[in-house]
Length: 391
Image 1 (cartoon, one colour):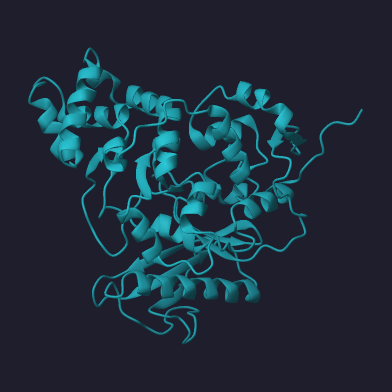
Image 2 (cartoon, rainbow, N blue to C red):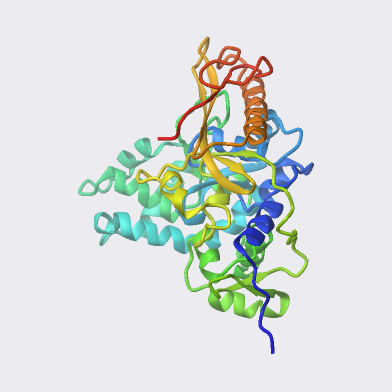
């Protein structure tokens, strides 16, 4: 009796790219794509969510996402792995209670000693009142909470509120072309609706497979930060199909999810910093060659923008904006020599980013032709394109 079919890393990579809309850009709405992806990393501001959508959507403009943020169709909140994600309002209300154990664990490991012996229910209640009275930064919230707890560290108290309550960062924080401190209020207050009282963990697993499968239990757990999810996929087995990877690990997937032929071409793409494409699997070799992992998963915790060539990480990149009157540039740092066609495609993607950035913040930087080693030609809109050796 034969076992599950074996999928090569290239086959897994093509399946992932198809579900991430990185084989062909999508025409779905930005909100629909944010929902499909289960959110976009948004801990850095403001570029990553905007650039994440730009790489996947045809005809996307910064104004579309800015409007969603202003009108509360999407929000920024701590979710997967305890990091800030941009999600739809509906997903905020559903995912936040499912991922509460991740926030609990983060709070215990980081601030457990500072909060030991404290009445956490009372802390959460007081913080809720203060934050629903008006949005506040943690620097403002901490001293207010410490006024009735003078023996406690204000920063720890504020972080306690972050872990205990579903706190969203309100605009203008995270909006391209505007600036604002990280002020928080509760999701319920901001959205005018309660959290989902009965969120279903099975749905979280199915959502993950739709956007990131085929995947192992360990992959699912790496993406969301939860543990002991094996029983969930076992319970879902009648609704799933299984494969093996070349190491013999069991992969779970949705029967009708795309699994393109491994020979399908993959276009050059510039992915956002902290893109979940490279953060959401325990084994990332389907898109991230092991020799390049230290250049992407850096010791300081920063994940650069990614140059994707033939479906694999092949370099890093950065959009720099010099402010009013300053130079805007896309700097591409390949990890190895690029073929001429791939270099040309990378330049075209960079020009697309520059045009997007110029439209998003027209006063944020000047225009310029190509400059530096191997810059793009006169078609670079609103800035320059440079290729540099990767550090």
